[in-house]
Amino acid sequence: MVRGLRVSMLLLAVLGNLAWSFSAKANFNGKLTVEIDGLKNKQGQVCASVFASSEGFPSDRGLQKQCTKITGTPLPIIFENLKAGSYAIAVFHDQNNDGTLNSNVFGIPSEGFGFSSNPEIRTRAAKFSEAAFLVAGPDTNIQIQLKYL
Image 1 (cartoon, rainbow, N blue to C red):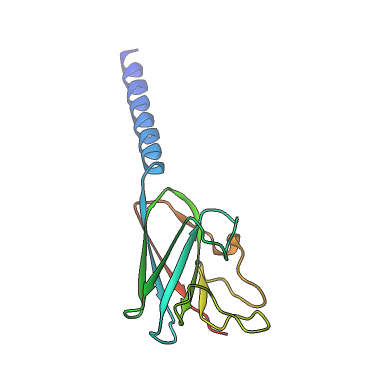
Image 2: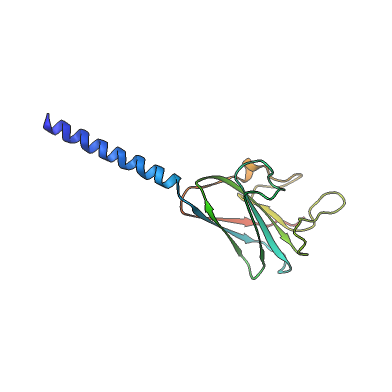
């Protein structure tokens, strides 16, 4: 009887610790490092937006947005304070520093662009589900390869 009680107490302690560690991990503020590669040149800046849902993806501002002067390649962009969850990134090479992804008269981007998970792009921008990735720890690193059409 005493041995069974000890085993039960030990099992409860282990389960309690597991439950606590899972909830603690879900409540962290993580850092995301996005490495941008494939830049055609070092003119202008690179702008990246983080989205937590499909709402507004990929053309709106998103949850967080930053533009960074190009200093070298690959170019790192860091986002702080992200909760555990699913995100997607939209990025573009703003060669003329106007803050927008420029396109030609047919709507085809005239500046480089890319998305997290590097989905294949043919006739439309990526969907959130195609670009989604998980932030599940305190430090997440992803790479995005820019495309020029």
